[in-house]
Length: 114
Length: 114
Image 1 (cartoon, helix red, strand yellow):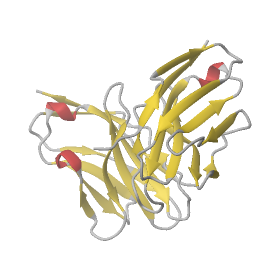
Image 2 (cartoon, one colour):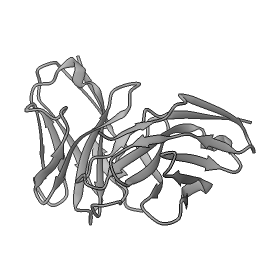
Image 3 (spheres, helix red, strand yellow):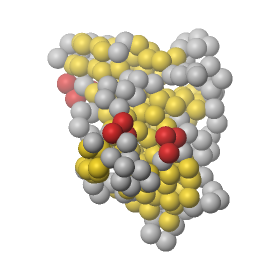
């Protein structure tokens, strides 16, 4: 069964450093998303991406964040200058359609900012 | 603004007994509703969804959920719990007018004792 994959599984970085989290969505999906889950808190929507542009973003997704689909398979989330409060589990998701269709989630990348 | 409430942080059930995990929502218009499950150190796995039609929807692993428009609820149920059902369960909602953002509840930890 096809699945969303994410690398790395755990990323440790120093405050102020740039990080890139990588995702490979399900191959025939067209809609891509990033969510995050701070330890002990709920899963929060960050951004959605379709047709090579952001279609929706939350207030969390400020100028420090960017997303890119550099080739036909990868979908990346970049944090330019990490802060302590960026420490969280970051989930990538994809779906084949808009509307009432489920999003399929990857296993997540745990980001630890020191 | 859309929101989801899961009033119980934890639900404890004996194996073989029926289980219910509660969820209420607040959105404008008719919602798309979802349940996801998260096992330790894993991503979110889709269980079931309500889009339209029958109020009782069936999903993976024997789970079902009942959409109640008047009570704005979407409770997750299973007739006979298994120890392997122990996990963190998230209710989620999406407005039909939204491009893609899913709003998650805070999660309910389900613990099934042998």
